[in-house]
Length: 440
Ligand SMILES: NC(=O)c1ccc[n+]([C@@H]2O[C@H](COP(=O)([O-])OP(=O)(O)OC[C@H]3O[C@@H](n4cnc5c(N)ncnc54)[C@H](O)[C@@H]3O)[C@@H](O)[C@H]2O)c1
Image (cartoon, rainbow, N blue to C red; front, side, top):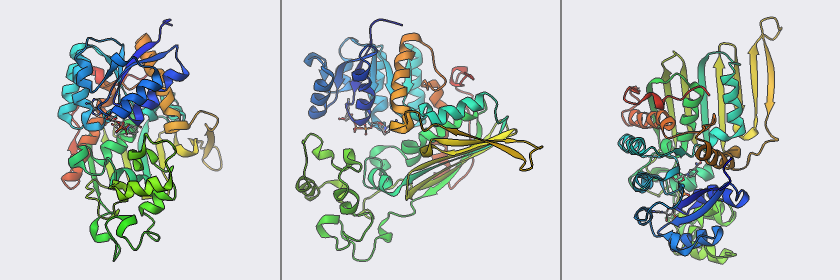
């Protein structure tokens, strides 16, 4: 193992980057944060102080950082989705390796162009598909690799997005309007799940992808009679509406606080009065949930045909009482079914001699670290460091090449949805063999 830590510059000192960069605080021998680039002075200063970054290594943008000769091994790029391409290209051309948030591109054109830059410069780029590291999914993947359920006949996956998460991120929040954020719901929220499906199904790839979806709930015509426009300011239903900003945020100030109280981020010990003032001063989370100008779907179903003859479905359901990721894979020798949040799954094997016709094995992962995306956040950062130090890719490691199939499937699913559900051919022929993941 190298003696010196991997050095990295944060680009976009927001919520996600800090989660990864904090690995340097617990593992200073492995990762050292030596710079930051962010146009927000408060965030820049927060990163500078948190990681002890020299003032000369604090930049106002990714572009300003790229203007300086490379002074670190890598960049942690946690800018918003639609900025990934523009902020990454100049830094990759400077020779930085990169930990890049998902979705790494918001269109097929951006994806292809970014991959071309990386191939030309030979950078090591890992995409933050944190769920591949969650003990639940990693354990399932290992059982599939071991052949424990035989050849996969069908894979069913579902992501239920809770009503408060949906309201916060995809109705009132940063990913609610694709004209502004440039992503769809499937790309912003569920590219993780589609990536997992591609990972589980290796080495086969889809032949077609089709999809339907719409906005079911939060649109102006569904607003209750008499609803106002800003919950705490003009709405007589503020106490009774289960989605009012008072019920979702004021009464639960820690719920999604990093989004709901973004304007209070640098204020220590914010009070209820500060939060009410924030609502009075135009905080977007005080808007009536039915009148937010949101245009991304709140439920979507995707159907996959695979080259092996297998089929797959993925359902994203927003507005559920609780968040839940469900998985059920049926193979020729048995099946795996479980719920990620329960950190447990059942592997049932065909057993013709048993009276029941099968045997059950329960795999309990509750003893593992399941904080932060089921334990994925920390493990991913550790693996990124290892990838840079050794060049070796773990079974979970998602290089950019290995993220292509999942992103392409999402782009096609959304095209299909826009076309009313028509099957879209999944053409992978333009991608090199490097984009097909080896069975590790
Ligand atoms: N892997 C996951 O599970 C997961 C979970 C949530 C979000 N995300 C993704 O993480 C990314 C970041 O989300 P977030 O909520 O942390 O964002 P954020 O808004 O908190 O942070 C983004 C930062 O980028 C900065 N920025 C803007 N332009 C810049 C530029 N030109 N150069 C440098 N910095 C710039 C902003 O000032 C901001 O501080 C998004 O792509 C999001 O979809 C991933």
